[in-house]
Length: 337
Image (cartoon, rainbow, N blue to C red; front, top):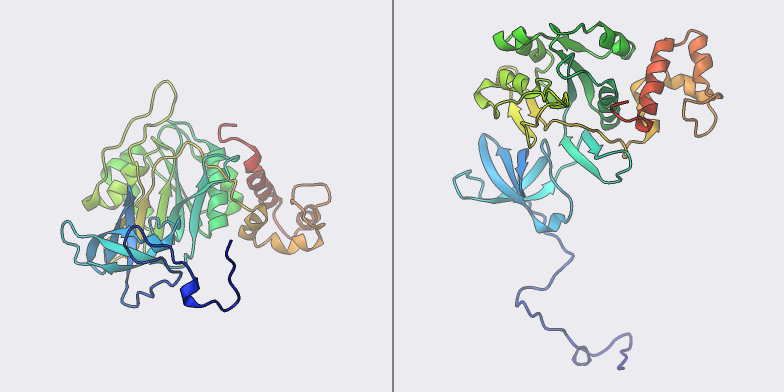
């Protein structure tokens, strides 16, 4: 074997020919200083529909981004043909830092996290009070994901003409979550949309919920000029709805109010493998000071936790402590439990 010294002559170095005939790879990435900022509206089989100024542009991810994927709500830098004309394709060369992220895993044993939405301000959790029956454990999981990702939760309870909302409202009352309660008739005459709309002005809101609860029907009413595919019905045998939304989609609210609505596919599970439990308590600022006396690595649900004394001394509502512990333990419970 031939060995080379520290300063070999160029003639002594063998250069492997490039069989493809293209330029050799380099670690130097282009700066793309002429890139224009846009927002990802939806993703479909590797093609990303983006809004650039007032134009809808079709784009694909540049190879230099590697495995990093852009999702609905992402702010991205785009180069290439930005005319938005038919059969044109631009390139996404940068994904800007995200201010919030809604993530989930398939289940609690799955280490692969999926980013559902980026840069949303609010998470609207849509739940039917009947047909299908409400699933509090799924609501808990959505709340944990919202707190972990930096989103403010909003609880939307539908079909209150079929069942009373009192039990659910009492369960989540200590969390101080804003809520809207609607009936089926209010969905038809637009009252439900008007009531929910008051919480959406000037904000980017992601809607999540399992199938059949009226999520897409509500989105259609909020943005009637951008109606999505017809909604489905609830299976009489399983009590579950049929998926009618297959991809997340960002839709603009009226220009006078500002804001965006992001409809997401119906979920039947919401894994939390990615969530660091220590972040959940940050959503309970009234309880945070009480953790100073906790033992190291306290789970806040054990005999030596200082939060019990903190609540007993009147510094915080015991119901808030109960709510925190219910959310912290939700990873150990299945949604149907």
